[in-house]
Length: 158
Image (cartoon, rainbow, N blue to C red; front, side, top):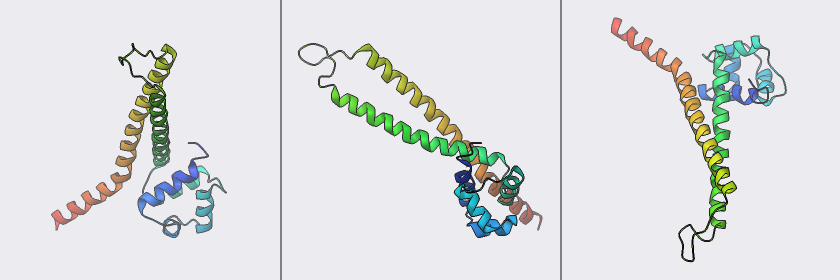
């Protein structure tokens, strides 16, 4: 877990639960000021404290890793958009598309290789992003699905 992303990951898990800091404080027994300091990166919680907070929210510690993956996915999407803008800008710099009148316009091999590498990189990142998002989504809804299943079982037995 990246220490720089830990504060955001804690806040992400809390918000995805639909809680404010006071609700997490009540559930975990941790002072609201401490939770605020953890989420702002002013204090670094111990592993024991992380366990206490994630357990209070109904998650395991691994949810922090999944939240970090989700954040990386968002960063990758921003990177992909940046690459797309760069590719569009490069395409606009090429005034004559290949096969245009006056002979074929050749794009230097180094530019083509660079574009192919960028496309490969973007493809890999999109795949990772989809995997991380799916994993985060399933982890976040799992407690709710389990609770819904228990409620249904309770009604059937009544």
